[in-house]
Amino acid sequence: MTDGPPLIVTRPEPGNAATALRARAMGFEVHAMPLFAARPIAWRAPAAEDFDALLLTSAFAARLAGPEIAGLRGLPVHAVGDATARAAEAAGLTVARTGTADAQRLLDAMTSQNIRTILWLCGRDRSEFNARGAAITALPCYAVDPIPPSAEWAGLIAAPAVLLAHSARAAKRISDLAGTARAHLSLAAISPAAAAAAGEGWRDVAVAQRPDDVAILAQARALWHKGAK
Image (cartoon, rainbow, N blue to C red; front, side, top):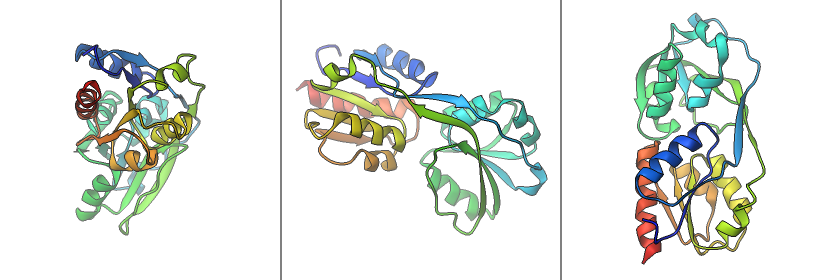
């Protein structure tokens, strides 16, 4: 797959390296260009007995939470995507449900089971949900900060390429950096929210059927084939 447009992976580490490795195994010409870096921030775990469940929408919450997360091990975890579920288990948490769509659909499934008090271990910058009548306490334990793009960025996006957007925030940043001259660029988005955040004017936009690497790379491959024609 080296005779078509390159693939640009923009997610923070350590996910960037994992996605790049998987993409190279699929035959993509890959350029790893993180546009954000994640770091832990100080937080305190509340009393676990005050909540029915723990919501995790990113693997960073489990990876960067630090020792405070031990106080939440009694709560059943509802995680968005397999990577987040695996990170939760690695942190000693018990995963009750792994959502295969976006966070809103997972939250809808939780409230349909009468889960009413939810602790959301999240990032400092986050999306908002329709709580569906539940009491959601957002507790930031990490931050994901923008970093300057690599020196290769401008040259790569000046020619046809496929870009990966692993979040709505990443899609917005990609859109801002690409500017309005983007009709030659294609975007594979992790969710409908990410696709919407990217805006209009792209050659093609494809949305992963599930919020994971396998699904987003499957869409990237479809975009690659269109771009190679």
